[in-house]
Image 1 (cartoon, helix red, strand yellow):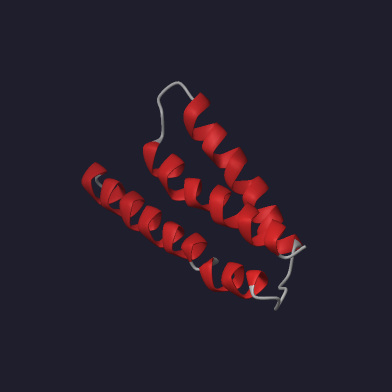
Image 2 (cartoon, helix red, strand yellow; image 1 turned 30 degrees about the vertical axis):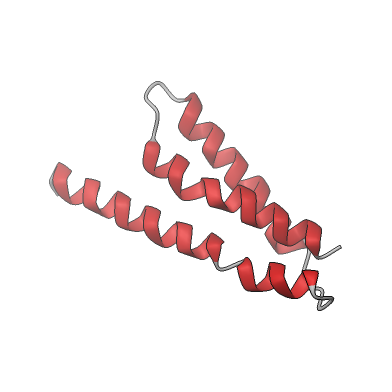
Length: 85
C-alpha cells in the first residue's frame, strides 16, 4: 500500500475517533439533568486517551492524527465520568 493511502486512512480514522468521543455529549447532558449514566467506561476512555496523547507527543516525531483523535476523549471522557458521580 502506498503512503498516500495510509495518510488518508489516518485522517479518516482521526475524524471517526473524534466523533466517538464527541458522542459523550448526550450522556453528559443527561448526567447534568439528573439521569446519571455509567462512570467507569468514560473514565477508562479518558485515561486511555491521555496515554495515547502522551504517546503522540513524546515520540521522536509528533503523531498528529493520534494526538488530535484522542484529545476530545480526554475532555469528553472525563467530563462524562465526573458528571455521572
